Length: 129
Image 1 (cartoon, rainbow, N blue to C red):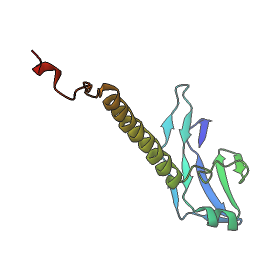
Image 2: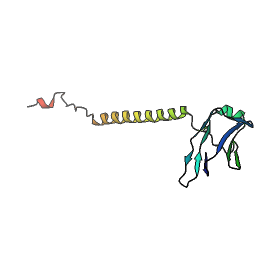
Image 3: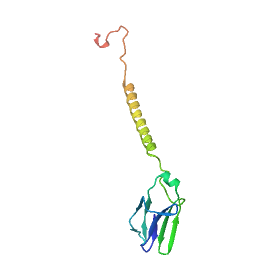
Image 4: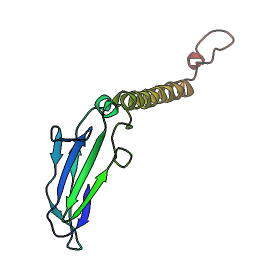
């Protein structure tokens, strides 16, 4: 993401192992900033294995200035939480909620249950005269 440059002419390229690399690159549109300068985003879409096996850099050229960002400066999404962990956590939360609701309902039923009291002679107390 290159931002804060003026005038608008900027070139953003990627290099792989020191050679120009234009595959798997998404170049965003040129956008104005509030202060009159400009910004542009360039995204390199490679997997973690390819990233580890090669040396990538981003080169930003504006007027007479060239800025090279190396792997240490580039933000990747490889450290994000895997989807399996997210799905597992959501499933665990749902399971805890279901168990809690079922437990609460069982508790309420038992709490409301009152056994019929037995009389000494075994007869129904409402039938006495």
